[in-house]
Each structure stands twice: as structure tokens, then as C-alpha cells.
Image (tube, rainbow, N blue to C red):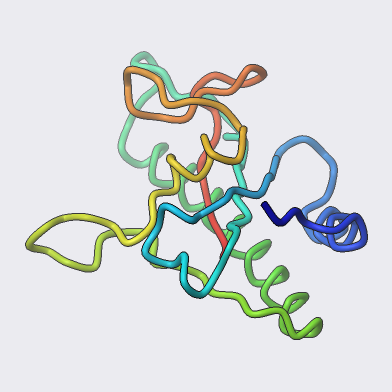
Amino acid sequence: MRRVSLDLTNLINDVIGNDGDIVWATADISYSEFKESYSRAIILAQKYNQFITNDNYNEQNYHNLMTIIKTITDEKIKQLKQLFDQLNVSNYIPPVAQTDEMSLLAPFSFKYAAVQAGLGWIGKSGVLVTREFVLEYALQQYL
């Protein structure tokens, strides 16, 4: 199994930061349809900046929260892409949703990769659960 080198790990940490709001790890993706072109995925888990419950839930608050998280993770992914392009490392950002409306299967499973990366496990509700934060992370991936 190929691991991310210490130098590359430090460069990735520089991009992602160490404030605890985003955790990341790498996952072996030999199970995926991308295995011929890529050996690992970088999985980002962004901590929610607020916890939505049944008592404080409304569509607008949820939408705003997801927009903030997507903006943050998209910027980190953009910065990682720039880093890997500068280093001439082959990279790809897979689609976040299914591309085949007949099968409704996504080409890459964020949740499975997060589990493979050791970030947590999938709970009964179908979301990533970590030791530190229960149901508080949104996932993003990068091959």
C-alpha cells in the first residue's frame, strides 16, 4: 500500500490548515472504478459550524449551512488541485452525485472512502460518525 510522503503530508496540511474544523486522511481506492488511474483518495471532513436539531431546523438554515460548508471545502479542493498540478501529480475531482439517473449510483462513495481512510464509521442514519464529532461533518474527496 502506497502512503502519502511526509513532505506531501506537510504540504497538504498547509493547504487544509490545522484548526480542527477540517480533518483529512487518505484512503485506498482499489475498490472503486477509479482504481486503474488513481491509488488513493484524499478525504476531507468539514465540521458543521452549527448543529441543526428538530427544534431549530428549517430549510433555509439547512441550505445556508450546506452552502457555507460547500464553499469552504470547494476552496480547499481548489487549493489542493493547484498544489498537485504544480507538483505534476495526476489528480481528479470525482462528481459528488450520481451521473447515471437509471442506476442512481455515484461513481465514487464519499462515505465508504471516509471509512477506508479511518475517519469514522457509517451510523444507522447513514452518515459518517467520528469519535470526536457525531454527525457533524460533511465529506469531500479528491483523487
